[in-house]
Structures are given as C-alpha cells and as structure tokens.
Image 1 (tube, rainbow, N blue to C red):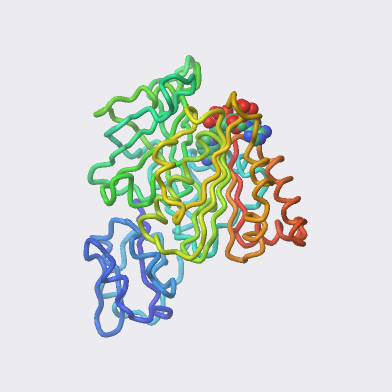
Image 2: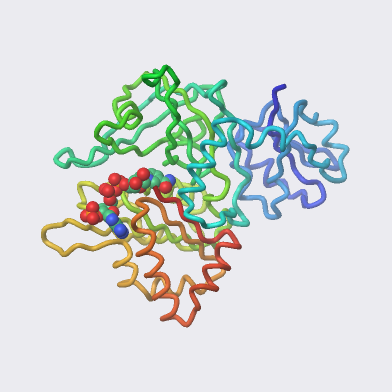
Length: 391
Ligand code: NAP
C-alpha cells in the first residue's frame, strides 16, 4: 500500500485571513465560503505557507492511502481523526531504525523534543527499496587548498521529485557497491546545509557539507562526486533538532567543523524568510584555522544585523589555542542575557568532545546571571529549546 503525508488546514483554528493562499507560490491553496484547503495534487511541500500563518492552522498533516478531496475538506468543521495508518508507516523500515539509533546516540541522552513553533517534519519518505534519485549539480571545496582539511559543498537536485526537508534534518546517502560479504553498504547520515526551499529556491534540491576522511568509504564517494553523477538518497530523518519558526526566537548555535551544516541552513532560512526578525542569531564556530573553517568567506559577508558571529581558532600560530566554550565565557554577558529569555534556543553540533566543555561554560554563565543551570537546562530540554547533535 502506498501512503502519502497530506497537508491539511485545521478549520477550527483557521481565521480565514488568506495569508496562506497569497503565500503559496504554486496555487495549491484555495477556499470556498467555509474553508481554506490544500490541493494534494498540487502541493509540493515547499513549506512556504507555514511560517506566515498567524495561528498554526496550516501546520497539519495526515498519513493517508487515499488523499482527502477538496470537496471533502470544504465540508469539514474540524480535522478528521488520525487513523492508525500513521503509526503503520512511521519507524518501521530498516533505514528509519538505523537513523534513529544514530541520532539518539548523537543527541547524547538529551530527551529530544522539537521547538513548539517548528514545522512538522517529513520522515523516511524515501527508503532503501524506494530511494530518491538525485543528480549532482555542484561540488565545491570550501576549505583552503593549502590545508589538509578537504571539506566539500555538494548540491543534489531531485528534478521533478519533491524531497521535503527542514533545517536541522539529515539525509542518508547509499554508497554504491557491496561489502566483502556481498551486503549493500550501510547508509551514511549527513546534515542538510541548505534551507527547506533548497540551495536554489524552489527547485527540489539541497546541499551537504562533507569532510573527506582518509580511507572513509562514503565521504570519499561523496567528495569525489562530479556534476551529473547520480546518487541514491533515503530519508529525511530527524524530528527534534529543528528550527523554531517564530521570529522572536533567539537561536544560539555552537559548532565545530562540519557540524556547522545545520546552522548554515537555519541562518539562510532566517535571511530569506524573516530578515527583520526580532530574535537574534548567535553563532560560536570553532575550527583549527580560518582556512579550515567551512564557508569562511561567505560567512564573513553576512551582516551583523542578521547574525552575531564568533569564529574561534584552535591552531592559529599568532594566537593561543581557543575553543568555542572559551569564547562563550569571554562573551558571557551576551549569552547570559539570552539565557534569561523564554524565546532562546540552544543548538550544539559537531565533535562529541566539545559537549562537556560547552555545557560547563553554559553552567558558569547561567550562574553568573543568577540562573540555576540544572533547572534551566531541564526546562529548556522539556520545551524543545536545548538540542545536541554530536558525533
Ligand atoms: P575538526 O576539524 O576535527 O575540529 C574542529 C575544531 O574543534 C578544531 O578547532 C578542534 O581543535 C576543535 N576541538 C577539538 N576538541 C574539542 C573540544 N573538546 N572542545 C571544543 N573544540 C574542540 O572538526 P571536523 O573534523 O570538521 O569534525 C566535526 C565533527 O562534527 C565530526 O565529528 C562530524 O562527525 C560531526 N558532525 C556532526 C554533525 C551533526 O551532528 N549533525 C554534522 C556534521 C558533522 P583541535 O583539533 O585544535 O584540538
């Protein structure tokens, strides 16, 4: 049985303001005298309508084998009950279980909940038996040629197939070939580095940030891809390390190396959709040298009005060793003032080793600002405002 995740609008909450119909770039939303509705034959899951909706009525989804028709939706007073079809399809493929195990480990015991204003993610739309086929449309080195750190920015295009993703999610790449014992290689998870509407807006494409690891099967496969090559993709995965949609949200992003990928996606989302947002973006980004910091040039061009950047280097001959957690302490007033706000979300992504030091700095800063770290952390985790994804 094939199932579809259908986008629906909750008639009970909708205030019929017409914002969604105006926002939809492909006219998938329409209305009659009673209801605003989404045409399942047209919707391509670009998610452009989600953030502008003032009530959240737009952010509703049902797994269905037969999509609800427009006529049926026009007649609703409220949304139909979820059927058990949803649980039938979630979490029951080998890839999903594999991805869950990887992500759970990466979340380091943080009981992950998405931010309250995050959009609803699609999960495991493409599987090993039915992978998405992407064409490589670009592969660029984004670290200096004179460093040993070879990090690539790869753009994958899905053609006419929608591959719906959100900032913070990952995809699985299936390396071709088999192991010595003849089994297919296991998939590798990579964080998506572009916003939900794509590296190139509205063209079913996405970007990855991948570091070549000596002897690494998948990273060498991905970093060696040439324009025009085809890649099998599964996923998307990840239902909690997601970006808040409300413009008041402050997002503190703490990363090392390629752990910056989801933060590139979140920053670009904010730049495109909410450039006047009142919430702040603050980035603590660690690398050995400027030449090894992915996207160093483009990142430096982003205006301070969009994002406060703290680029931190551990092996610059002219300076002492500095890690992100050291710089956080040096900016304790900036971080401390944000910690006091219920709109502040913290995301930590990158090397597992940095987690302890980062959390210790957060504790010192919180306590300096008369905030008890243990209770604040617990509250932030519970509210989907504290996220860890480290490998
Ligand atoms: P890297 O180049 O090895 O390290 C980046 C920086 O982190 C270096 O300046 C390094 O300093 C510093 N560092 C080392 N230990 C640290 C510690 N305990 N605390 C703070 N900083 C520390 O980074 P990379 O090779 O790009 O690796 C990034 C990691 O992110 C990988 O493990 C990758 O798997 C992971 N990653 C995670 C995600 C995700 O979670 N979604 C996505 C992509 C990548 P020194 O080397 O000078 O000590």
